[in-house]
Length: 545
Image 1 (cartoon, rainbow, N blue to C red):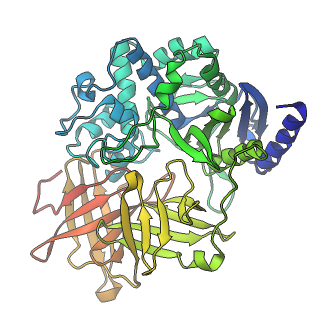
Image 2 (image 1 turned 135 degrees about the horizontal axis):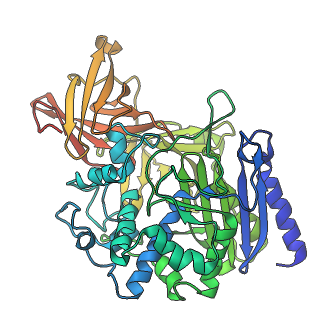
Image 3 (image 1 turned 120 degrees about the horizontal axis):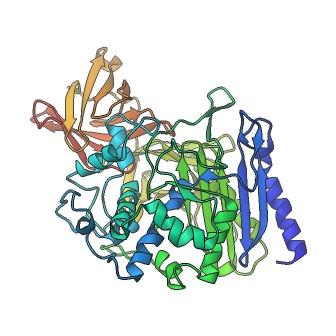
């Protein structure tokens, strides 16, 4: 990149980070590497609103799930040395794990195809969220209560923090030292990443760490509360310069040799066919025809995007302490600033006209699988989707459909000729969603208690009112329940309901099918964003939690 191109890129990046320059705003740091050199490094906003400390080159952030590919790198380095086998069952290294009557390997964990439920969602269904103190032993106990899976290992993709917590534990057992010590000794110190560290306890000081913030309802910001322990799934603190040193390693091969990058980005096929986009702690996608490799990170008050275009020798790093910001799209906008004008870069596909988008607006229900999606238009007329309360932008695809504009891109839809919504999910799974017809009414006979031993929780639903004016709410009794309710129970379609869980990051919902035996409610079949196929039998009919 010549001096003139670099100057132009800096101005484009300056324009993109300008919103973070507002007074009293949390900050962002953006880095652009080109041909192995940090060509642009821009900082804006405040690392501490209270002390009015600006974000600078030495400011560190919690990079959350960007930590996952470092954990995978540790596993792969041990495998290179013959100290473990990634095709070995996880229970070989962690015998305390439950027997799921299925073979779950380290590779399954790294590729997010294990079917093991996400530990954070396990805790949420029991009434505990990220801002509530939990010990590592309590997290592991929640994992070990599980006896069933989201799906057969290797058949589908579903993001699960559990797998990477377990991988970090496996590294510790095989290496005979803590994960943080292994990463420091084998990766961070050799590469000069002296501001990067693993922080299992959030109580321990981390030098240079920006305070994390979330928007306050009505304006301004509040400090983000978080109390869960962190491990191989998301415990790293780092900064742009250190992540640039790590990125440079994919050229110098100082750590792990040339085979490390190949191993980290290796993809596998699902058992039913089709390639899994999730490699080993990294997602492999295409953006405007350009192959990208990267990962995002989300933790209360922090968001990160690490985005590489290896064949174009470009990497974009965005880290922020504003937990409701969108570094995924910021990073792609920065990447566009580099790619524009390069050969063989596809144009951005145009969205359908507004009338066509308006036809999609509303609530849609997959009656076969008791799944729901809400589609809306934002203030600018851009289509938005939401599943289980997690919002995402929709963008146009080459074939005229709309897909989730997020790293996983595990939701693609189009309006069919019969007025239904044709949806493609992960692993090529297809489903038909019908428009929910208002006004829905609550299923009859819902009041009662329901228990699930895998969650260790009992849910009690109470009803008020009569006829079409009936309403219901749920209260939780769980092993660590702090957010006991009431949770709103919302009718959707016949015996399909939503249960709304208040959350620190999102107001999430669970898709629930009401089960009946002899016409009487016998239980609830519950699906969350990353924890599915959970059955809550009515308490007098089934085992208590």
